[in-house]
Amino acid sequence: MLHSSQCINLVGFAKETTLFWYKILRDKIAREFEDVLKQLNWPLIVTTIKTPPVHNPVETREKMDHLFKQLLQLQLPNSLNCDGQITPAGVAHILGLKPPILPLQLMLKSMRKRFRYHFYGKKQTNDLGKPEWYFTQVLSWIRDHRDFLDQRIQPLLNEAGRHSIDAKLEFMRGVVSFVIEKIDSDLPELMYDEHKFSHLVDEALLFDHELHLNYGYPTSYPSSLHVLTEGTAFEKWISVEKKFALEKLDFMMSSSTAWKSQYKDIADVDEMKVPECGESFMTLMLTITDRYKHLPHPAHKIQFLDLQLELLEDFRIRIVQVMKDVTHSPLGDRYCAILNTTYYISEVLREWSELVFFVQLQYYKTQFASQSIISGNKPKGQQSVSMDRSYFVDAMEISDLDESSLPLESTVFEDMIQLFDRMRHDMLKTIVYHVFTDVKARSKPYRDARWLALPSQKDVVLGLSTSACEMLLVLKDHLLEVGQKISKPLFASFWEKLAEKLNKFIYEEVILPNHFNEGGSAQLQFDMTRNLFPLFGEYTQRPESYFRDVKEACILLNLKRGSALLLNDVLAKASQKTKKSSKSNDSDAKNALHEVGVFTLSLKQAAAVLKLRADLTT
Image (tube, rainbow, N blue to C red; front, side, top):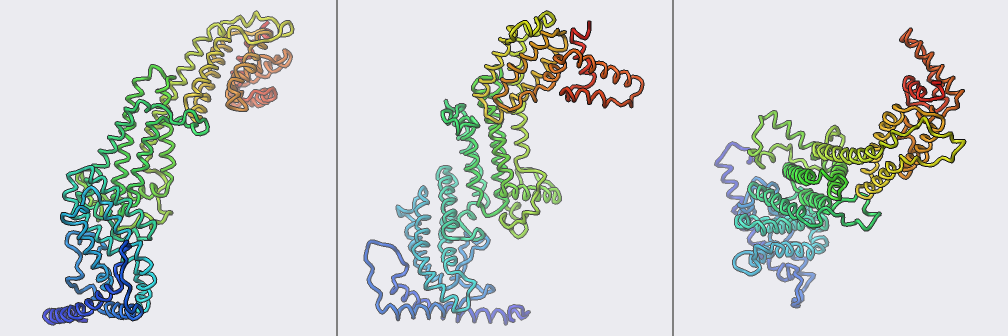
């Protein structure tokens, strides 16, 4: 009640009196409590030196229990403060960093002394390059004391009605604060040594991971990463991460095996045919994700995501430059390896885009962009970490988001996926054009064949046209070569696009410009159905489906003369009706075409093909 009183002097007197008696009682009970802890050989350090047995263990433990409960009753309210309960000034700005309950503060006192003795000052164990030493020490304390805390301390808290307090978590908060203070004190010197700073980050990430994974330390509690994501420390972290990533990228690209697949001799594993540099780059990206995935605040994760997007663009520009140097050889190993890389990266990014983690990041990114528009845009370089930190309401954790509110219309990698897809499309188009042009160049003898002068199939045994041999042989070789060099999904797109171009080419430049007698029609059909289509039969059960124009033209050219005449009359009538009335019904003509197996060619196209038959023009 006095806390809200307007009587300033009275409130001040009451506070001073409370603290006066509090210190007297605390110091008295604390001395007794510390003596009892010594008798119990606290802290429970694993050592090769045999510790003396506890004198009257039952009585000593009962005394400890009694003093522990008394100290619990002495706990000051949050509105009051005492020297023994003040958070160290250097790390007071870290949200949630407050000392544990009073009895545990006293239990941690001897550990704090040990920690400062070994990891501060001129001791050999105080090595800036060996942060793992103090991380390991803290983890071993947590491991060695968790059973005691569970079996002895937690029941005391429960008996005192403090069920909401978890003894292990309070203990962990206490020893983790040692680490936070240590990192904070070392940072000014570490900022000048990138390798030691990077090593500290690596060890801090491992430490935090083990805390959360093995000991259930909540992600919302202060940890070593809270120090590393503050102000200049985080800027340094991002800077070092980028520098080392670019160095690794330089090394990947300059490797003599950069464009060779690591699994080229293992067919089952090498379906994607990803070269070494492509796989190494995405491994680097995954490593970066793992490093920032558990950062305490979304704003920091978004900045790491921006770094990943920057690295993706840098890598894309590099492979574009390499690709331009080998464009003259689109079937070369390097060109195909680059194509495989673009496909692999875009597919991996698509998979990542569907992960809840990245969907949630997109949500935060969208929210942050909206907030920036409302508050007035700042130049990119002027957006500080502290500003980002203040934006997110209640410092909401990513894991707390309602998935139904997440954005579905876009992803964090959408722009990069589009860029890699465009590059893949252009490169694949180049390969298709190269193969098609080579096949077309060998087709002149076939296009100029005397289709009107070929003998009837009744008089000869049909075989592949001599003039088609070179063209189809080149096509077969290219299909085999490309199939060995690019990934299966890419090859599927390749042969489908190639088949589409060949279908159009043969229909427009082999069939339409020529006229066919019975023997010529039969020979064309044999060449197509028994030789061309089977080349693609290895990749699909119905290769003729990709050559519909050619297939249907062959059907029309090889209809029996009577059927062809009837069909020609039906098409002629439909054409005449069309001239008289634009709304005339041509369903009879379409049905007639469907009956003979022609579904793709229009009425006009079908009539044009029939006119190529010598037996209908005489």
